[in-house]
Length: 112
Image 1 (tube, helix red, strand yellow):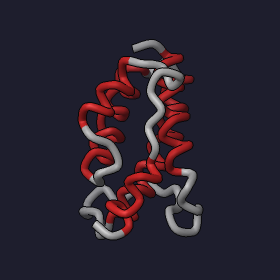
Image 2: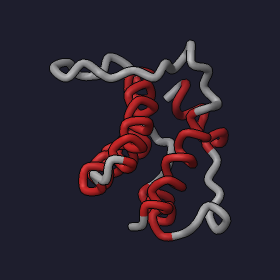
Image 3: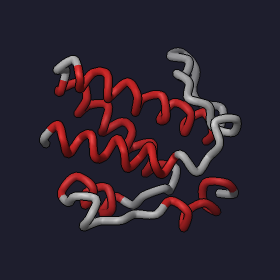
């Protein structure tokens, strides 16, 4: 996966998470020794990890970025934001070819 493709995915997921106000889903690192207490904790940590991925990518730590991308995508899948098929498409196609929409899954995230 190219650096540009990784940046595209970071931007895609950041854009999707931007529908949640910072007050509701603050960008914060999760506690390493505690499980998440809510889906909001997972989204907050995901938002934090997207910024970390960009820093690591700029520092040339691509292997670490790929690992974190898998973690972020796993979080989004576990919350019902995306299906596995959609995530596979994200990794293959440019955002012009694949336009996912988090709004259609808001009920799953908020209620589910």
